[in-house]
Amino acid sequence: MTDAKCFGECQEEYRAKFEYTLNQSLSEFYDFPFHPVVLESSSFQLYCKLSEQKTKCFSERCNDYAAENSFSPSNFVCLFKRSLFEKALKCLAKTEPITFLKCDHECHEEIVRTDRLKQTTPNNQNQIFVSSDLATYETELDKLCRFQSCYMNCMAPVVKEMCGEEESKSAIEIVEAYVQWHADDISDWHSITGNDETLPEAYGKSLLTTPTKFVVFCGLTELTGRSCDHVELKNPTKNMILFNIRTPVSKCFFVKPRVGMVEPNKTVKVYFTFKGKCHRVPSDYCWIYNIYHIVIGQKDTAFVKEDEFSSMNLRTVWNEKGKGDINNILHLACLFDEKAKVKHECKGHKIDRGLHLNDQGEVEQVVVEESKGEASSTPSKIVKLKKTPSSSDTTDELPKTADS
Image (tube, rainbow, N blue to C red):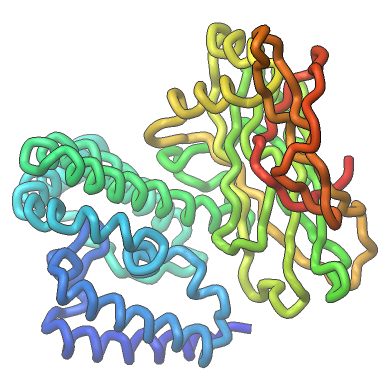
């Protein structure tokens, strides 16, 4: 169990080191937009070192073993997206004075105007909310989400004008990624605490439904090191829906298919797999599969269905239509029950067909051999391919997953 007092002690130690090392009041420091402290190369290195010490304190002293893998502003720039952030650092630092003055003012004005509030509204940054303040908390979350989206759109043209093509691309990408990851983290909290209905509309709602909100991995043992579950996604709407699944941060989690399509009033079965020994099973933290989904029209649906042998068209549509903010997200939390009876036997799934054209322009199929139960990328022979149903799975090598 985590200890709130322990977290407070770690935070106070971090505050003291932060203010002494960086000569910056932590109460005046802000995570978004990126503060000048993290936009200067040498202070960024110190910021990451201090953040690493805080995370280590959470993990070793407070038993929060997931602190290193969970979203936080420092984890985002120092761990998850560090290479991209460092690539964008020069451009972000160059444009920060202008984007802050212009976009911070414009976006705050927009929120005030929209909500018909006075500018003297108290600043709730760094405020701690208790359960009785949930309504106020949701209101502040909604404002934060709208501010971040507004700022992201406001800073893009400034960055493009002041930085080179590659630098501006990296700068815009890191800001967009931060906004999306933060929104995911907020949505995850609402999902695992049963507060889905109170999630501000700015953070999106799910169109797809499932019989359960959990992916339950049962019977994991040291012998197999693998557990599987599958869940049916249902589309209760009259629209065609495309989905793209993001796995938890840990490399132990897998899913198949990662990208797919659900027809109106139909269901699609999704296979989830955890690979790892018992001592690697996460504890005291809820790991989340995020299922992003969008509605597509008849033209895109027809284009997807044209591709009978792979998911190339499906991915093409997703890459085109799934850009930017996605408002429809379904969250499935992972649970582990090592003593429960195994629900689904894990069996190997072969690699999907590799398609080739012979000299006559005929489609041929690569038959893939399996070695020791795992798929191999070495073809054993080429045979003529007859018409087969389309698949939304990738041609990448996949881990063993639950048998249907």
